[in-house]
Structures are given as C-alpha cells and as structure tokens.
Image (cartoon, rainbow, N blue to C red):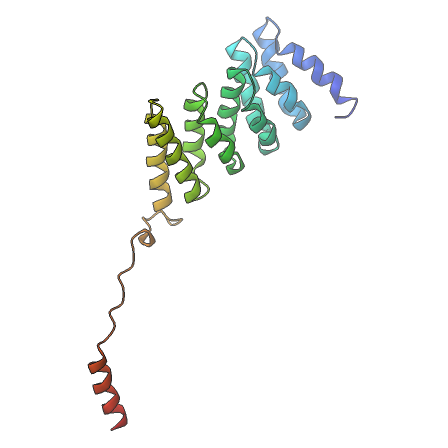
Length: 197
C-alpha cells in the first residue's frame, strides 16, 4: 500500500466507527472508491458491533469485486462469527466461482452455514465433485445428529443446475444411452453373400 493511501485508509477506518451514521456511510463509500488497498480495513469493519457498519463494509467489498475474493476467503476462517458471515455474504454477492471450495468448507461452521448455503446456491457448483462434497457433508452431519436441511436444499438445487445445460434445457446426457444392438452373425452372413455372390 502506498504511503499516501495508508493514512487515508486509516482515517476512513476510524470513521466507519463514528457515532454519526452519515459519517460511517461516507467512510464506506470512500473506502470503496480507494479499492483494493482498503480491503483489510473493510474486512476489519465486518467485526464491528454495529450491524449498519458491517453491512456497509460488506457492500463496499462487493463493489470492489473480484480483487477482494482472496481476502474474503481468508475472512471465512476468522475467529469472529460476524466476520465469517459478512465474508460469506460478500462472496455471495460477488459470485466468483473461486470461492466455492472455501464456502463448501464453511458449511461445517454452524455459525456460517446459512450464509454459506445462500452463497453457494447463488454461485453454483464448479462441477460434480462439488456436489459430491456437499452430499458427503450431509451424510457426516446426519451421523452426528446435526440438522441436514441446508445441505439437502443445496444438494437439490445443484443437482438441478448440473442437469440443465448451457442452453437452458435439461441435458439428455445425464441418462445412459441405449446400447446399440449388434446384428446377429447369421444376418451378417446373408448380407455378405448378397454382396459377394
């Protein structure tokens, strides 16, 4: 981060905690305009006790977009559940498929499961392996006696998405093709005699 930007980011980070709602809103907008150098400050703001500050920080991160994804993925491991939920929310709104593995891992976190499920539902699976991972997590949760409804909702949604092709129609490739019946040898011999004879 350049020396000129850092003091501005630090000042704006403090303003995110101001008692005046307009000051907090202006700070979030300014941090959004700074872009990538403001990401650490905005992620830290996800810890704020004030829900409005957390929401403004998440929206600023979403506005910055894809450059925030690596930092948001790291934030899914934060000790503060508000930060983890805010990160999942921002990842959902950004919609980058690079976040899918981390969000699947976040399904194990009961504090974040709902937010992670919403994010994954919007982003969608990368492939069938993601679907199998969710299925595996559902089985583990069931064995441990934990609720599985979020896993099952996601599994159902992804199953349907994977069945629908790029053209929007249900893919026929999901059904096994009928095997081609081989002609009996006697029919082949008769045809061969006609050609040769």
